[in-house]
Amino acid sequence: MKFKEVFLGAGSMLHGTTVYIYFMIPEKWNVVPSYFTPEAFLSKVVNNDKWVIVGNTSAVIVVEDKNRIGRPIRLQLKVDDRKHFSDVDEWLLLKNQEIRKNSKSSLKEAGKIKICKHEGAYSIWVESKKRFGVFGQQYSDANVVCVFRCEVTNREITIKMRSEYPDIILSNRPTIKCILGSIACHERTRKEDEITVEGSSL
Ligand SMILES: [Zn+2]
Image (cartoon, rainbow, N blue to C red):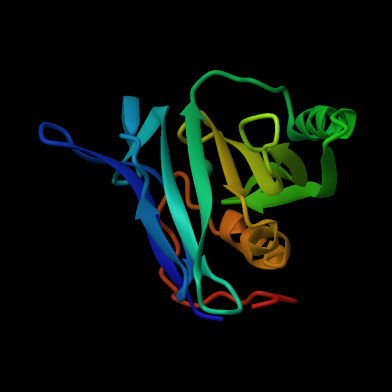
């Protein structure tokens, strides 16, 4: 499968573009901006890029389903120079406990992942929800959360993905792990336009 590089950044008339992360998505997928303005409170130049050290941003990944209808995966990204967990094993344990404790949630997959030579962890789960009102319709959303610490830029990175079309996330789990594994957080190293996805359902 062919992949293309995208990046999440914040623009400023005075300071130019600051980058949160670079990552790869399948060529047929798209990333579009969300309604929310990115927030970048602190940035630092490392390896020729100006990285956001404290801030957050969001975007929408658009994936075509079997009927070629574009379905959204909402992406939220938070970067922070403060530590919120001591190591990824501890994070994974606590996150999975939290998901299992919620009777409306069902854990689908969790594990560790290498991101730009850093050790990361992720969890994928489905949560059943109800729309507003007493007779609100039931629906489920699928969630992905991934955390890691980049020691080079000295920041903790949290990526969340959510879709009200659970199958878009669940059937594309190998691809989603490839996207997470393709993140460049301190050096724009990936020049190749193709990475291999094993067992992808696309
Ligand atoms: Zn890094």
